[in-house]
Length: 90
Image (cartoon, rainbow, N blue to C red; front, side, top):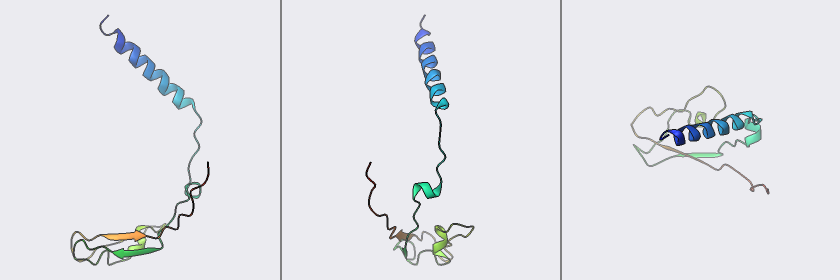
């Protein structure tokens, strides 16, 4: 009798999970989420202050490139200017 509340709670959780799993789900693609790349970037003051020296734009490129810090630990880079426009109504 003491574990009856645990059984009821577990049963309720299972029912809820099964109901949620039955709901249709739509896949989200980048075009649907309005993925925006920054228009500007700059080295931050952290580390030795020169940011990612090699290919900093590869940090947001749609491909296989990478941005690299080649001379000094703790460097950071700032990406900004996303041109996000107005928030849609609704």
